[in-house]
Amino acid sequence: MRNSTKLIILSVFAAVFCALYLFQGLNGSFDYALPRRGIKVIAMALTGVAIAYSTVIFQTITHNRILTPSIMGLDSLYLLLQTVVIFFLGSNHITIVNKHVNFILSVSTMVVFALILYRFLFKRGGQPIYFLLLVGIIVGTFFGSISTFLQVLIDPNEFMRVQDKMFASFNNVSGELVWWALGIVILTFIIGWKSFNDLDVLSLGRDTAINLGVSYDRVVKLMLVISAILISVSTALVGPITFFGLIVANLAYQFFKTYKHSILIAGASVMSIIALVGGQWVVERVFTFSTTLSVIINFVGGVYFIYLLLKESRSS
Image 1 (cartoon, one colour):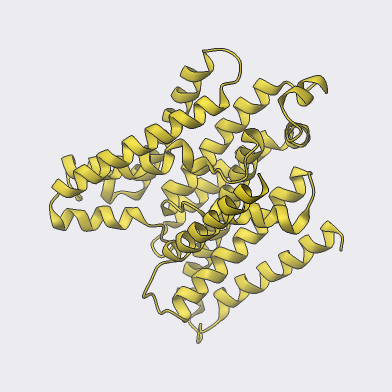
Image 2: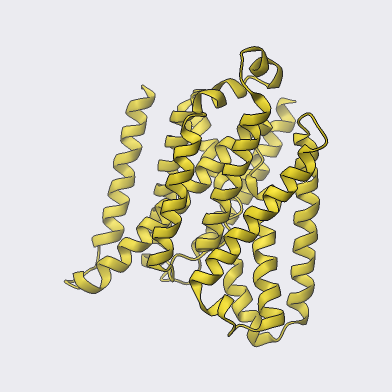
């Protein structure tokens, strides 16, 4: 089966799941329920596409299919930021109560952190990508440790607000924030679209890409910045989803079996929409909100991550 046919079939499934989520059980309440469901579907599609795109390009530049952009510590930084604000300023502060202020603060903090980290490391010359990953792991662990320490000391009532930030949720997404995030993601896609062909060459390795005329350092830096922006936007919009990108990216590699990033990114994006919209439908209609979608994704993703590690160790 051709990859274009596979992509069309997946798109049909995604459309079916979206329609099922939007229209099932409306019972005539179109004016009230349909707009709210529509915002949630757009938020899920936006989050899925952003995570899928950032994960695929991140794995291409690192040449490792078991890594995700979360390894750079952005999820840990987001949780640390929310914990610090609630710990020192309280849950009634404007940075927590006002979703617009919280969104802007979270996105800007994560993007600035990523830019400072990249700027500091790339000054050393060459392309220290593995050193960058090592620093990201250490910084992420450090942020997580500080967050845990503050959460132990925080007031129990305030901790409930922190706990809400620890898991991704699509139930209270602000409609205005969705449109802001959509504009940022579209702009990022337009900037990164021209580099799809360069990514195809980058997957062959650094030396081969340079020999074929690709400006390796420039493309890698651009992709790292794009990846950081997309992860920051998706995390600030709905919360951290640790293993989701790992799942959809590797499923796209196995299902399409191609090197073309235009197909891989499109396939992973459609798969992410199916997973998020279908998963949220199961959470609401089957589990009746007794659990959250992020808990299910992290559990499945953790098991899948262990499977990939065992698979890689056997092949090596």
